[in-house]
Each structure stands twice: as structure tokens, then as C-alpha cells.
Length: 280
Ligand code: ATR
Image (cartoon, rainbow, N blue to C red):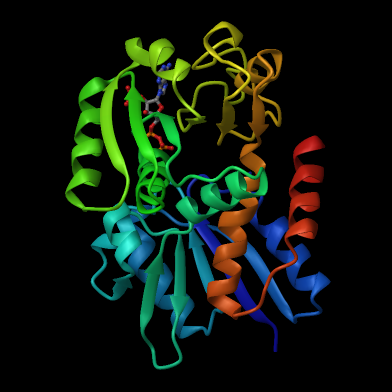
């Protein structure tokens, strides 16, 4: 019998996860199917327990359910998901245990690694202080980067930096407002945009333009719709190395796939599938 996997969220219609995971299952000849389900936060408990009762192989959670999942007592979060405060991957154990993971930060790390960018000792500017920034910044701190979180609402950046510092990870971290961006970038190795600036339909927006960037910088935009954001265009114009948000999407999915199945996923096929879906 086919094993069923799924992603829960609301809205969920535009999720690329079903195409990506179904392509992976099919390439590996696995008798599995992955489907998107619209689940509202107040129904999350029932939906997860129902999936477990029906023998689902595993789940992803997306907006607005990632934080909600940590409130459910029957989910045992791993330490990183607990620190981040969000679960994007649910694993059903053989003896009924339900575990929660967060693979977003690992996805970001793998995306940077693919571009041959190492985080340990690098000076990284993370723009934004929302859920995506949390996942990325906790991972970077664990990997020993020197991080500055920069955000429109300065207090959020300072607060997040404090929280990450308190976790006593190898990296150094501070938080500040957007006005310091230009100066910080002069001395930085990596800029990661985790804000929604530049996301469809506001494709003209960008956290920085070419004149603030430089050719020794790697610019990673986690926004993947459009495929080439204004920020990535500005980065290219400045001669900087660019990393697409598609890679983070694929690698967070690949990490989830490994947690559910124990099998190494075909990332090139997943990448191709996502790129094709975004180009149509
Ligand atoms: P997510 O969980 O997806 O990261 P979020 O929590 O809504 O989403 O965070 C969005 C991020 O984009 C925030 O850092 C937000 O800045 P504020 O904390 O000041 O709201 C940032 N952001 C959104 N629109 C922005 C804009 N027009 N200019 C600058 N930053 C913006």
C-alpha cells in the first residue's frame, strides 16, 4: 500500500513541496505519495493525530502552523526546533512517538555550502528578524559565524540576538536597525535576506542595491519567487556571488526526506522539478 506524506498549512495551494517530493519518490521507485492539505491552526492537533492514526509516513508544516506545533504536548521537539521555536518536519516513530524537527536552518546551510561558502568564522549580515531569520541565525551561530541581525524594527533584531547569545553557541551575534546596513556590509562576507522584500508581487523592493554591495560578498536571498529577485540582480551588478532561495527550499525538503525515510534524496531531480514549477 502506498505510504502517504503531506504538508499542512493555510494557505497551501501554491506549495511546491508536493511536486518536489513526488518527483523524488518516483525517481527512487518508492511507492509513496505526498499531498498538500489545508489545515487551520485550531485543527492542527486533530490533523496530526489523524495522520499518525492513518499511518502517514511523515509531515511538513508551513505557515501558520510551525510555531503552533510546539504548543502540542504530544510532539517531542528536537533541541534545535525547540530553540528556533518552530517545527517544519514531523516524524512518526514506530512505537507511536511523534517528533518535531526544523530543517530550515540546515537547508540554508546546505545552500551556502553548495556555493562553496563556509559559515565558520565568516561575518554574516542577516536581514530580518522573523521566523525564517530565527532558523537561519540559530544554525549560523551553531556553525560559528559572526552574525549581525539587522531589522526594520530594531528591537526585534536585538531581542533575537539576545536569545541566540543566551544559547551559548560558538558564533558571536548582535542585533541592530536597518540604518547600519551600508557600513556593516563593507566588512561582511555574507548577506542573507530573510525579509519578504522583493517577493512577488512586490518585485521591485530590495534590502540593498549594488552601491551598498561589493564583489567579495556572497548574497543569499531566501525569497525564491521571483527566481531572480531584485536583490540578486543588484548583487550580480556589484560582482558579488549569488545564492538562490530555491536551494534552501530544496535542501530543507531533502533534510525532511532523510528524516522520514532514512534514504538519501535525489536533490538534483528535486531542484529541477522546483525550477520547472517556478518557470511555468
Ligand atoms: P517570516 O516568519 O516568514 O520570517 P515575518 O515574521 O513576518 O515572516 O518577518 C518578516 C520580516 O521581513 C521581518 O523581519 C520584517 O521586519 P519587521 O520586523 O520590522 O516587521 C521584514 N519586513 C517586511 N516588510 C519589510 C519592509 N517593507 N521593509 C523592511 N523589512 C520588512
